Image (cartoon, rainbow, N blue to C red):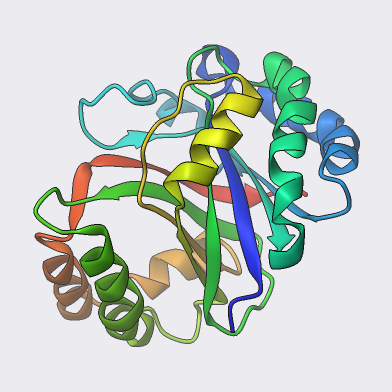
Length: 234
């Protein structure tokens, strides 16, 4: 049963420097939660060594790009009208947190594909469908086919798997309220593990993972992907 929408923000650290970025996010947690109007919040920072910092700029069109931070707000179906106001309220917060030009926002109905258990490491991933696939075809494939293939391969270590079927009109409204350009996505994907070691174990079976990737051919525009493995910091 679909009960919530997810409002997701993805953005990079100023100068792509993660340690001060994480401290700024931690300092802003109370303000972020206050501006979320009582809805559930998760805050993530990219879980990668300092020597791996950097990546392509958001929306560069130059292939998959890594992102430094994500904020997710889960809003009950009957409160979805709160979303634009939340975006407006968070605008000044992001002005000090995000590298200019990297902030993107999307929103859509959220589907829990496995029963949710809390973990400290989660994949934050947005992408567009392959141009040869219609929106209806993509959503049907993602929900009914791909999830059923991927979940057994990823195994018991997968603590949560949330599909957000991005709503274009609502995302445009959110971007306008936030004061940033609208960037089109079809999907915002979340998968949660206990920690980074559990994630690596979950994707370690090569034959199964090959089937997962093969199933994405002709469905996902991989060049549009923006992603990171995140540590949950609030």
